[in-house]
Length: 469
Image (cartoon, rainbow, N blue to C red; front, side):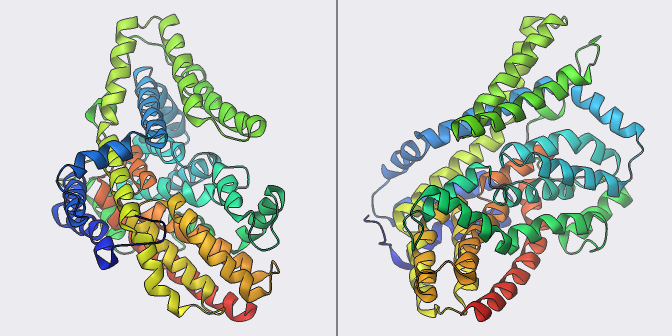
């Protein structure tokens, strides 16, 4: 199918079916599989198109990268547990007698600290703080929400991340933006108008400090955790294997929090940020590989048998398999949505409403709907940015004014909303994995908070549009 074409209303059926089935059956893997299968049939390409779709979507550099990243993260977390590193860190934090509020705020700050990777952030925060939050009777849903809301929403605001490079790169050639340097400067200025990302991060702090009390399904989850001591609801299926949640420290191993926890984390952070500064691209997967190798050597030197180290590594890989399966199917439905022209259909049925006043607000809504339906923010950026920003320049007379900056931020914020909230999104899946939460419970409890921020964002964009028109 040529770029810009679509299959009409049929093109939105697979993602809608996946989301509806997921909430109805509470089985994400089954729901994705069924929706992909039916979507392939709707394209009229026959049954053989199903395995062909899987091969196309999974046989890519993009999926290979996230597959390896997930595996190395799983191994690192398993190593942390086998060396007692997380238990040691938890014990240090426990001695500080942190309250429920302070534990949530600590998780919030940790998520913002690991700003360079929206993949590492939710897994790091969830796996590190899970034991501590369990003891404080904080629901896994709340921990997943905190981890999720400090990943993509933070990454899109910081100008030294892959998100910033990618988004600014899309701006080159639009209006007076003639090079990458000018594009980055424009992106940085637009970040002040990214009301959704800013609001999503601030919302966590307000919820954690009880300035805004818990509401909706999250309130029920927190009441259950506090009153019944159940951090998961009865019948919940945590999106992580028992290989990771049940791994015990090696008998007789002397815990060294610096060597077994802090040093590997510093390796990940220093390599990721260092490669970004030197090479212009953060080598996150390579950073985790280096941390795994380092910690494996430390474990062997400190007396853990080689066989046990390898067995632990295998358990780590098995532990992240539920997330990898869902990610694989999410990549497939994303590829199917591209082929069916889902994003272009959504843009076409809304383009008639465009005016300078509603441009930022409508851009945010369109980007949010596309990202939520497809589970990809970067794909949304690539589709919406070349359409919305030239429109903004048309209204502004070719000048980089408030309307243009707000429209750029609306594309970024709308994409983050979908990436942050969709059950099909990789970072949403990783947040559920890190916190060992039921994936759909995480989506359901987080949604009211995200929608609240979205509603405020739309109002602010309407105000900006009115002023800038």
